[in-house]
Structure formats: C-alpha cells, structure tokens
Length: 379
Image 1 (cartoon, one colour):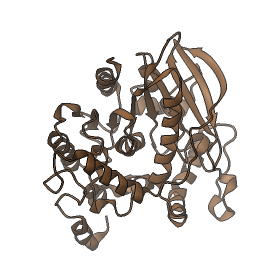
Image 2: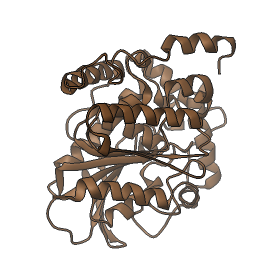
Image 3: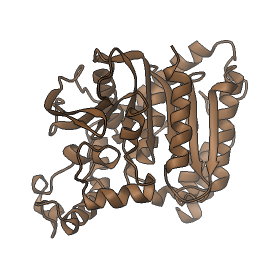
Image 4: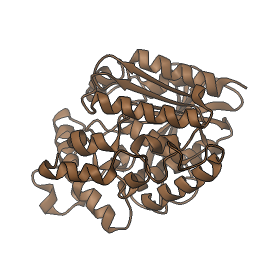
C-alpha cells in the first residue's frame, strides 16, 4: 500500500504480541482483571472520546405494530449535531424484561441510510434498501428477525450516517462541488450524496484529529449512549444485552464489546483481520472509521474484541470476502482463540467461515441468533 516503505512500516509493529496483549507470557493468566483494566484504560486514552452527555432522553415519534412486532420510532439529541433517529423493536404483547441486542448497521459506502439498512417499521421499503438487503442480508431485515425470536432490539443511526449524516448545504462551497441536498429520496440523488460522503471522509477524519478526538472515539461514545438508553428501559433486562453487526457494524461491535462489559454477548460479522492486513494489503478497501493512532504497539486489532474475555464472543467470516486476506482473517481467529483459551474461556469463543463474499446472509444469521439464544435467553 505504501510502496518501498511497506516493510519498514510493518516492522514498526513486528510479529511479537503488543505490550498489552494477553497472548504470550507478558501478563499473568491468573491476573486477567488487572490486565483488562490496564488495557481498557489504554484503549480509552487513545480513543479520545468526546463528551456525549448522559442517558439520552428519547422522544417517541410514533408507535405501531408491524409484522407481529411492537415498534417505536425514536429520536434523541446529543450535545452536538442533528438529532439521532432510532427504532426499538420487540414482540407485540411481550411482557416483562426481555433480553436485548443493540443492532449496529453497516457502512456499505452508503451514509445516506443508517438504521434502515437492517430494520423495517412499515410496508414501504426504499428500493436502494431492498437492493442492499438482497446483497448483504439474504433479503431480510435482520433486526426484525431477531426481535421475532423474543428479543428487544434497538438500532440507531451511527455518527455521520442517516439522521446523523453531514448535510451538503452545511459545508463550504469548495467541498460541495456539484453535489446537492437529497430531496426527494431519488436513487440518483442518494448515490450522488454517497459520493460526496465518500470524498468527505478524509476531511472528517482530519478535522476530528484537529479537535482532539478520533472517529472511533466518536462512534464508540455515541454507541455507548445508545446502550445507556437500551439498558435503562423497563422492558429490557440490563444483565442480558448483546450487540452485533456486519462490516462497519462489525467494527462497531469489536470496539463497543471490547470496551463495555454491559455487552454480555457479541457477534462481529465480516470485520475481523489484523493491523498487518490493513497496513500491507487492504487499507484501500476500508473507511477512516477504523484507525486508532498508537494502538498497534499495544494491541492487535482482534485483541480489541478480546478485551471482553471470557464473555461469549462470536466472529463470522466469509472465505471470499474482498475486504480482507484469508491468511490474516485466520491469523486473527488464532489470536482470539489463544486469548480465550489462556483465560479459561475457550468454550465462549466461536469463529466460523462461510463460503462467498462480504455478507451476513441467512445461514450466518441463524448461527448468530443461536449464539444469542444460548447466552442471553437462559434465565
């Protein structure tokens, strides 16, 4: 990716486990809590998370019953930016506190949409979202499918997506070029917006660095506020919350589940490799949302998710995933397996490889949902 400088840059990270890796013998296997406290402290230090307030005060825009589910369309206001839209789903007529999952939507090169990529609250579906689900999700709104199994599911727009997207009219003319605001939601105009948003990613990342924060710092903080809200509901059991997502949602799963112990069960889909893979092979296929300066000296990318050991953790990969190299996906699996085995939690880690390209299709959803049933449904 960087020509003659590649071997030198790769050497900066090296082959040996990082300073805060739980692999090897640098940290005692019987001192897991002390190690985790130290490693999470370092991760938080490098994330440079901004202040995002307390538990969001969600306003219900409307309630309805759709396809056997109780649906709430929500908004909440963080201390900055436009209001966040979210949807809450649970079986219609459900009583008591339910196990819950925070559904984390993908990136997919489509910032115009957020929660609508994986959840549906009416009969009308935008044609781009229908195409998106056919390509990545086996034609399903997986958040709805999970809710039908007896879960409360919350899906919110991530930073810079959907309701939280950067509006073309809010940036200087030099950045607008020929791009225009989307109105109405025509396919052509949305595709034009997504080109604008793609070109704006480096502007956003550089601006966040100048503000003293990072892109992962912002989205993890906002995802934690959504988790705050989900855990605060009187129809949710705060001791039985999981999270899952594909691609950009898998990235968010990795960081949120590694950082926050309230996530009792996690499933990272289509977003597991190593820093070496990003550095030498695949950074051109990925978003600026990934990178945390300084962290590779301490932890490899999969070891962020490994910070939750021995809490139940699943990784689902695709053998022909164009975003990663097979060798580094397998190497990441070996890293996580070693971390969980050393912590005495080998039975709480599961990694599967499926044939095909980047996706979270029906067979993969079935395995993920079964994993949640195993660890969150039991009383």
